[in-house]
Image (cartoon, rainbow, N blue to C red; front, side, top):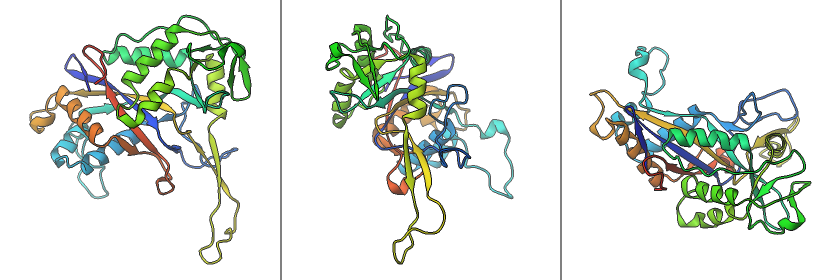
Length: 320
């Protein structure tokens, strides 16, 4: 894993591929779904808050055997408990910052394949900006413009594209785009997991990626998530307990998100292993290599939230 060092900081992109449905929730809500997922307010797109992601990485570092002083320097001290003396904000801050995870590829139903991924110009514009900050400057451009409800761009290997692209219940004109094929290769090399079991997903991306209009992407991201109805059973007779069932929203498996990671120089009291920005990102990369799959969000005991990680960035822009 590489990192870009700039003005005393080291930066990278953290890819997150959902292996199971993910419920990063916001509590209860009055509406059609009782337990919705986290979403950006202005776009309505799903997200995973950086605080939750950083907290999970902190727990994984402890499981991986990091020293307490390393964890405190990188992630900050443990949250305060009632009655404990409060430290200054400067002394409490860790040297690693993790942004909210942005959605990049959303899985949808299609014909001719098990599923496909969609993205949109706004999501790619965000990626280009964040990749530039991380030192990954060769993000391919995608010439051509999708049209709302009518036209999408697809990779040349999209099966049956001459008949159009079937996405959920809609049919779009589907001209091929070599730029989109180069983009799929870039995403595969930088944000998809590198372990051999993920070879299928990296290969599939080159034949199952479509660029849709921002408005279409927003509609799918708002209305094509998984909604699960659950009930609670009585222990004795396994019958439904009193009260109405509840509904939970999940990000579907195979969703790809990414977060921006930045580390800065620690003070002289930090362990040598995490004293420089590059050293911090190196330790983060080692953590991801050893704890390649994490569990994030709620509903852990029913198998939700398994996410595969990838850290990339900087220098020559090559996947590490």
